[in-house]
Image (cartoon, rainbow, N blue to C red; front, side):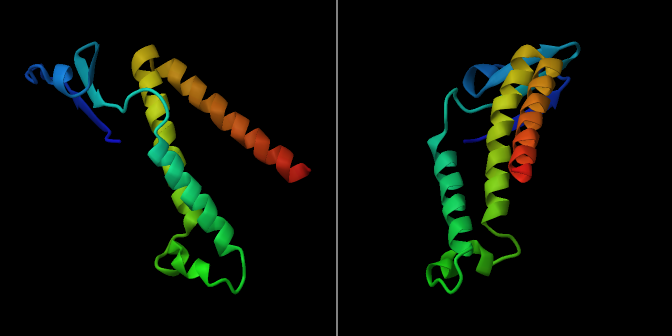
Length: 127
């Protein structure tokens, strides 16, 4: 669950791509990155599930359990955690797509997904 993106124009990194991650060459710039393996990362799914439960518990008034949620101990609540983890997960998917297939294809897929989510919100709002 580690991600790093290094943009470099100097070719003196040796066998970095063989040991730690992937390396892409575009023009005179090399993009070196560490991406997680393909497939779902169930740790992130569990954190999103925890955030959903915390959102649920925060909406129950006079509940002793909601004292354990992060709403009481900081400036953010579980909804912020859910959105952050969802964006973090999406960055893995679309970063790999952008590096393998190109920026234009990755950006169009990302915009398509954002449009789908936006339309789902509009449909739920109208219903």
